[in-house]
Image (cartoon, rainbow, N blue to C red; front, top):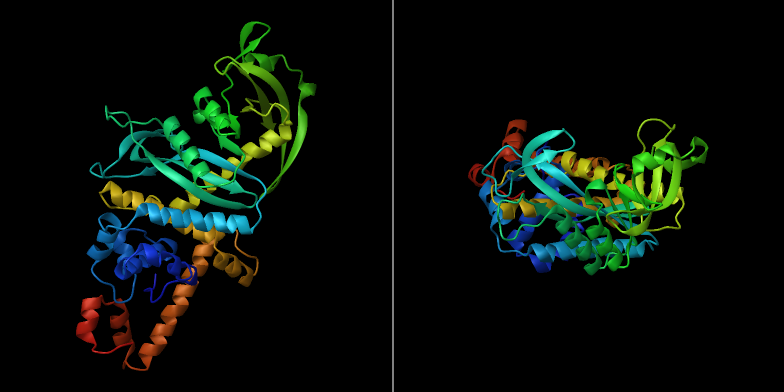
Length: 414
C-alpha cells in the first residue's frame, strides 16, 4: 500500500482519551500501531513501522509493544469504558455473553506461550497460541470483551483449564459492568461446574449439548439419542428465524429433562435445519419455560464470535504478531480487540457508515474506508511536496525514505 502520512479520523478522535495513559512518544507509537492494524496489508511491527512516511527504525515500535512501561490494564479499561459508554448511549435492553476459543497459528517454537493444540477447524494438531475469549452480542451491536491465553498442562503451578479461564472471563465481564443476562457456550464448555457458576452470578445459559449425554427417565439412564428415537415425527414444530442471509427454517422439539451429571432439570431442544434427517443439533438451557424458538435464536448468536475471529484474523491481524515475548503478543491481541471495538462502536465509524451509500456490513469495509482516508492524506502530502520539490523522483524518494534518510536528503519542513 501507499505510505501513511496521517492517522485515519477514527484513530485521531480516540487519541485524546489515551493521553493520560501514555507519554508523547508512547502515544505516537500507539497511534501508529492502531492505524497499522486497520489499514496495513501485513500487521507486524516491521510492516506497520515501514508503512509511515519518514519512519524511524522499527526498534522503537517494537520496544513500545514488548518492553515499554505503559499499563495494559489502563488501556483495557479505556477500551471497555468506550464500549460501555456507547452501548449505554444506544439504550441496549438485551445482551448475551458468548464464550469460545480460537487458535492463533504460529510457526516458531521459540515464541513464548505457544503449544501444540488440536485445531477443530482443520481437524489436526497445530502450533499456536490458544485464546479463550468472551464476546458481547448486544442487539445489532457486537464487541469483544476479554481474552486469556490457555497453555497445556505441563506441570506449571498456575495451570488453568479452559473451563477455569472461561469462568474467570465471565466474572471479569460482570466486574467490568457489562450488562448481559445470558451466557452462550458450545459443547466444550457445557458442564455442571460452568453452568452452576453462571447461575450463581444470577445469569441464564444456553449451551450446545452432546447427543450421547445421559438423562434420567422413569428411574433409568437413557441417552438423548435413544430418547430421540421415541419422539414421533409430528411432535417436531417448524420455527422460522431471520438472519443476515434471509430466513432460516428449523424443525424443533423441546423437552424438560434431568441430565444425569447435572442432577437438575434442564430444557433440551432437538433442532434440525430445513428437514428432519441426520443428527440434530442438541441445545440445553436452564430456562425451563423458554420455547424452542427462543432457545435456538439465542444460541445462534454464537455466530457473532465466529465473525469476530474471522475479521480479527483476516482484517486486523490477530495471528500476525511476530514478536517472541509473550508480553508483546498479549499487547498485540489487546490492540486488535481495541481496533475491533472502535470499528464496531465508535460514533465516528457510524458517521462514516452514513456517508457511504449502502453503509458498512463488515469490519473489513470500515477498514477500507479508513484506508481511503489514509490515501487522501497521502495525496495531500504529495500535492504539498510538488510545490517544493522539482520532480516525481524526488517526491517518491522523500515519501519512501526513513526519518534519518529524509533529514539527510532534505533540509526542509513539509
